[in-house]
Image (tube, rainbow, N blue to C red; front, side, top):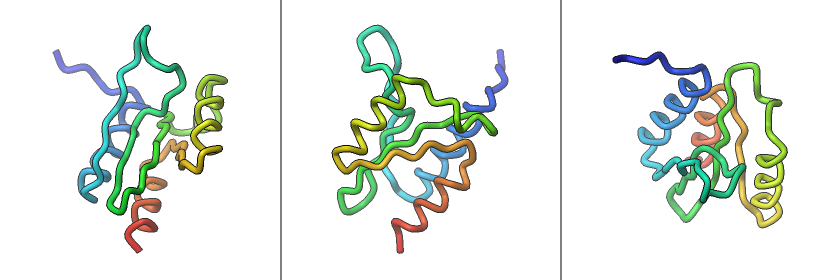
Length: 101
């Protein structure tokens, strides 16, 4: 059975394609009862030890960050980390371009 992707899943899939094309290692943590709630959708490691995180949202839903997500994003940022909250893969494309230059 071929299930249609949700709008957020389409954004996530497009972001992963961009990361792969740029040679950026990434993975998506699985949710569940033993995970930290609010962890971003994609963990990325680019060349030169540049680690960043991507939280994907459906188009037009970029403001729909849960309190758990806000808390984890702030924990990451307070330690010098980068969290991109995106509802459009173009944002990730621009970030990758900036990393490469």
